[in-house]
Length: 251
Ligand SMILES: [Zn+2]
Image 1 (cartoon, rainbow, N blue to C red):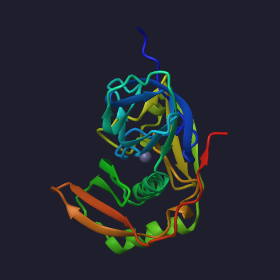
Image 2 (image 1 turned 120 degrees about the vertical axis):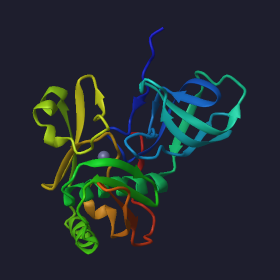
Image 3 (image 1 turned 60 degrees about the horizontal axis):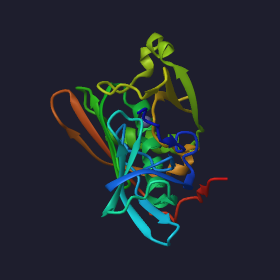
């Protein structure tokens, strides 16, 4: 039987916080939906958490989200397994928007960091309270210069834009691929490109803010030497702001 892919609403609208949809399948703690707003762990970005609200009034907390092997379907992992077969039931899937928005701010911030360090990226992790990139570089990194540069780019409030590029064009322009070891996410011969103003452009499947001002001030938590040619830069948010801007439900 052909696998029906989960429709990923976060690809083109990362500000969508909930969707009413149907349960495609469930087995114990694993639930797949027809369509979802929950980002599945990939590209270093943590998967989303949130809740499913069933028509019966029951609330099912979702503790993590990841791809089913093959990457066509998205598995929402429930905090507590469910014995009953829920296939076909309607559900309101609502993500933890506060947490997701922090992930979006941090992901966009790490793209800015890429633009400030002239070296290939060998590792990446994006969490709600911190993010880090590993660079293949021998030289010492000037902590103050990177911190000032990063906050200056954030203050410029640069637009973050999405576009799609045929894979063959990516091969012509390999300079686009900043992350070694990780193949760019590709669907049907097309890769998704994230451009931030005139400072960064790279293939990425992650969720981003609309413009860099939304990231807010950041600080460099540490720069670690993880081997002769590896420098790990860890970033945190410098402020404790009020809540995120309002996301929205599906129109
Ligand atoms: Zn990215």
